[in-house]
Amino acid sequence: MHYSAPRDDMRFVLHRVLKVGEVYAQFGEDPPTEDLIDAVIEEGAKFCEQVLLPLNGPGDAEGCHYADGVVRTPNGFKAAYDQFVENGWSGLTAAPEFGGQGLPESVGVAVKEMIDSCNLSWGCYPLLSHGAVEALKHHGEPWQREAFLKPIVSGRWTGTMCLTEPHCGSDLGLLRTKAEPQADGSYAISGTKIFITGGEQDLSENIVHLVLARLPDAPSGTKGISMFVVPKFRVDQSGQMGERNALACGSIEHKMGIKASATCVMNFDGAQGWLIGPVNKGLNCMFTMMNTARLAVGIQGLGLIEISHQNALAYAKDRLQMRALSGPKRPDKPA
Image 1 (cartoon, one colour):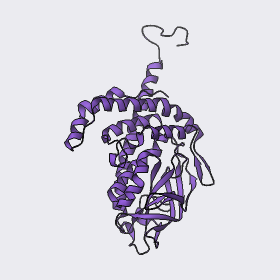
Image 2: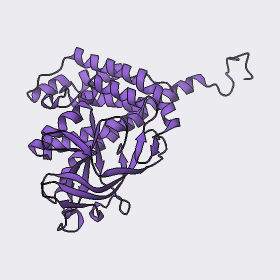
Image 3: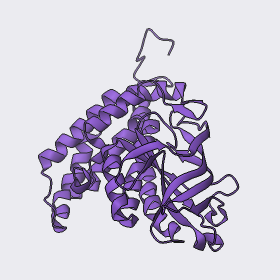
Image 4: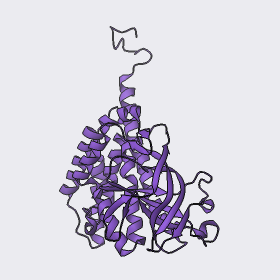
């Protein structure tokens, strides 16, 4: 599969069309220079072309490996993720107060497009972390923001979005996952969620699940849904990571085209969770994450369009059909 990052197109759009520096300055932010943005695009392109693209085909052929609740990603995925984290890509657009670099989201979109062009399956793993950060930043308590945001922004932890259940798809008013209040202020989360992207993997130290569930006295329908943060490894209010939480991956799906992305069935068996936002307002809070994810899926489409166009164009230029009126183009061939 051929791919060359559209560096010049991205620079033109960012600098001449969107004028991101001027827009950023309107919000009182110190605008990044064109040279800085160009350097980010160039280094992002190199990472995608040289590291992610070679893993794309082999990763899809190998797929993820599941055994006894443990998921192992394809060969090379872990090393690529470690490099991604080490070079600061995870926090490219996050606020500096949480350890991010504070660059405009438009620059992050350019980098994400290149990631999705080169390896969509791999790109699914850090995808939902951005949405988890936004949800916790806007709706979490101060201790939750302090405990969870910096590790997620750094890439050491990743985020997931746990909505769908086996008996209901988009009608979240029917969900049955329960949240039982505990003496320490936490909640015991019990239920099953399906189609959870990155619900279990071997890339990050911890996985932070944002889960929709019902309190015992919650009204029926969507008016009785609350949101909880439920980490794979328990996290106390000081931010310390502790023992394994009571949750596990029950199986993984085999999705065409993204076999290297672990799409999981997640079973919660009294797992410790913490309420995010007001009681029974979980769907409102979750929309912060959902809308971020929707934008990310749109970028996935753009990334796939770019690499598809590049390869279709190369094929069209190389493929001969019919006979040229000017005479044989390849005399040594049948046509």
